Length: 351
Image (cartoon, rainbow, N blue to C red; front, side, top):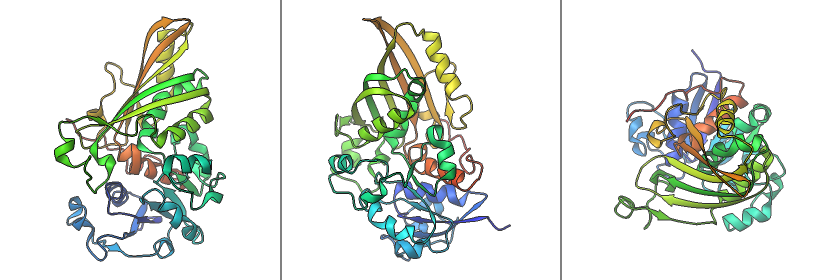
């Protein structure tokens, strides 16, 4: 039976590209037609991603963006920051829908982009709302109508979902202090001096403390959701695990908001969300979501001081799936009018 829609992946040789390919090969309604890359040109997909050995006859193709997008219903971009923005204008002329996994179209301000990404934006004219921010739990209806989606970053997704119920309820204001621990796959397929296994295994180290590029993305998103006058202090930490992000955010709310009300707020906020869980008898943990598009969140209300109650918000994701390719597929499904859960409902493995 023929599938209804055709898709291409541009930038398919990395870890995110592998997950895009996997989810599209499993998709009941969308056919993966081509995979473009500057690496492995002419070689089988399995040469870069051994899990596809014997699964697909697709090969990596050295195509221009327009050639890759020709005749496609949707194009998913697994390209690096600053590269994606150079390719998008060419794809726009093809009429294909776009889901971009880079950070190039998440921010609305070109000066902020330059500050955090270290370069002038190559297509600043497209930061005017051309791309919808692809967080379904906040922008589902806009994504359904969108032709172009900027898929959120991995840390941003995790932290935002841990704080979104407070923002939507108008309870999030003032300082947010967050520590986020991430797995090694977030550093990409090419090892560096700080991500190479001998220096990563058995080690914890911080990088870009208080200056990570997801800080303005998170702030922008939470303000759009209803937060007021927030400042985010964020310290990321690399950890010796392949997949997963664990974020802990500390905020303060009015003392009149009871612990029971806070916990109820999280349960009700995500009661109808297909991929966000609030565990009933434990706190979130990475192994419960690794390998899946699911998220776990919870809040732990604490002591009151000077009229404000401290709250610890916990959230976990798989950085390559809900923090990357899975969320992009979720947005793609919404854009195409499909069940947003298509090819994403597997729960991962345990342990």
